[in-house]
Figure 1 (cartoon, helix red, strand yellow):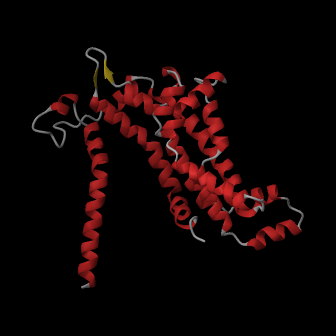
Figure 2 (figure 1 turned 135 degrees about the horizontal axis):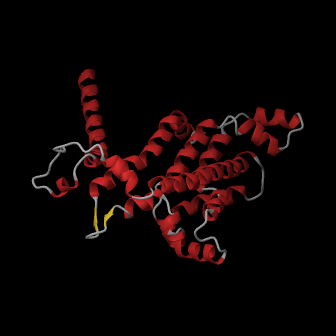
Length: 274
């Protein structure tokens, strides 16, 4: 009976994995097709001839590596700054005493329910008046501001750390700044990995903010992949090159996940415990 239940559970899980992975699998198959096969009927589930050259064509169709560099710079700056600022704010909420701290923390969490779209126009107006359009400064300021969800993760993690660590450091003459940098931050690797991965993917996959704030020459790879694989003759998308470019586009995120996956899983599973 137990074996039958376990077998049934595995079959359900395999079916769910196949369901969720099917779009990614179809993207990979499309990346190896000739563009004429995209409109073929009946549908060609596998390429008649595998076009391995699509990937080199995708890289050379436009300045792919230049846009990738822009994305890496923006995502790198943002993920590092927002991780450090969120960690500092989470440490303050978890370990420092202040009147009204619970109220402020509740207001902070309530902002997660606010759709980002409603701040889009005010954000553009502010950055335009500050002369920050077509620069990296918007992502620097967003990074320094922290993120409510990441602050919550750090706060929950720091709240679970033993009080004796903090008390011993205070006895030795450490202030809260040294306690944070020397004791709490080095021990928060699981949440640091989670924050770095999440914040990096937020920016790497963002289409709206770069389209709004950056020019075509300085935009990110997400915008370029979505807009520049166009046949100039009839303005139709070259879908097989777009698929090949998309496969290459997601490789950095997959690589980052494989590097940080242990810390990511541990951070998500422990930061909400009390």
